[in-house]
Length: 420
Image (cartoon, rainbow, N blue to C red):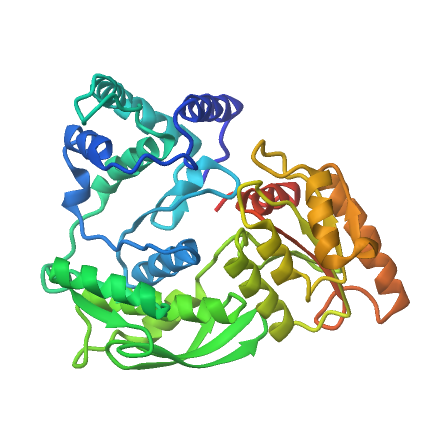
């Protein structure tokens, strides 16, 4: 991909500024009428290609990236849209595994802008039931993604099932009951983790883990996944079952195992327990709720052997801050609370008070900005390293930057990583 010019970056920022004037993604108005009207005006491109929809609280981006990598390994062209982004809005729309360029993002927005304005006018005039809001930022960006999806060719009929298949990960009983009721209403086939597919085994490996997966079509052994954490193993088997269902695999038809191995080996998931540096070790993780923080803590405890670990944390003010801190407390020797630059982030002083309630005052340090926090944490781990067996490695010292997708993305940029 060519390096974007300053003018292209400026145009991207201008479009993002326009989108940010709309309803934010955190403010929801539960209606599909506006986005349906927009898609109709665009020619309903979403109906022109087969698709895999991924929903849930945690793990959606990782599963989407795994599905993308598997389909690519099977020589299929892919279009992927995810939200939110880590570093740049262009990450939200990927074609063949790569984010579109800033120039293409701006070009596509300009193409659909007249249709967006038309739907805005219709909504404000009450055509969708009452005086409604303009399209939200999320709805507009989704319409960009839908428009670009038209380049993907429909696959051969014998490879794409015509029936809907609901692939359901592990759920608490109450959630499973709701999901299965919807499956019945939709007259869809269903595949459930630990029933029709499952993680049979996992071993920690250098740079990730080695998996044995039971798919819809059979057993897939010696699957190397270059991501850490038991939660990623479960994400992997969900992705595998989804791709099997997409291709119509079943009891009599297993996907080629070497291709599956190649697909999983190529998976990346930026911002998900991603190592940015060694000596000292620096990880980032986008955990932004208690479940995500618990998964991060479990992976750190089970797969690494740090003598001294510092957490750098900035959390959005509308999140379950106490739940996140409670999940992280057992794994961090010290915590540096900071601010990630977002207006939605909890201020440092308020976060410090909450952290001291969980960690104790002596384990909490404050830093007003993320760069300052990284500098402070680096000094702490380097001091601990000189007192022990040296820096980095599984038996050494390190830091983890977490608490929000924005926090992880800002840190990724500070360490010079390009958007993926």
